[in-house]
Image 1 (cartoon, rainbow, N blue to C red):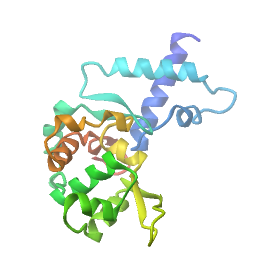
Image 2 (image 1 turned 90 degrees about the horizontal axis):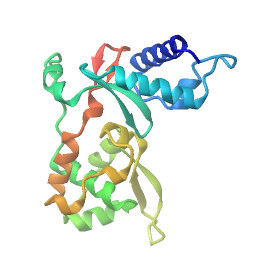
Image 3 (image 1 turned 90 degrees about the vertical axis):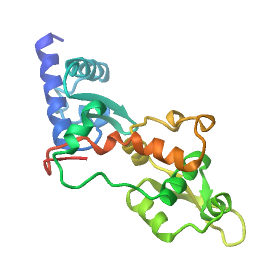
Image 4 (image 1 turned 30 degrees about the vertical axis):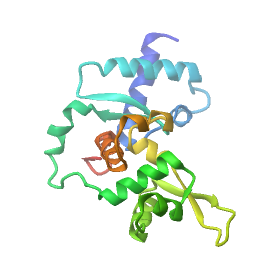
Length: 203
């Protein structure tokens, strides 16, 4: 395959990522092409590598997260980009961040088990907020009286916190308490700043 054809594939991939406003997998990117022109997976990976290199020295980068690849503002430029928007980045309560951190590190875990560890009742609003954001989901029910729901994190959680897998979470030994874990996770919310041409904002 000649370089001109590869460059065209790269340009199509870049355009699709700018338009999608969400991560795209290699198969989704290959699916943009008709069957007779569809690049092989290895060719698509090469085009992505070219796109990644073309972002060097620019204000955005190609980032691989759990759901695939996306173009996003480099973290070092986020403070300036956020000034474009009147609404300040959402801050989450200590209780919500502690609950999310517990689910992330102890999953699958029930609401009762979270309450036992934290020593306080978990608000229904917290669980609802985490579910509405699609950061947690019910993955089953504990085989005990009442069959309480067991919660675990989702692929969207990984995408939002700029992770490809749970093994990238900061080790517990490096962080003093659950709130600090939550704040550490919140600092990594690079997924909030990604190109989205559909509403002309950055998340």
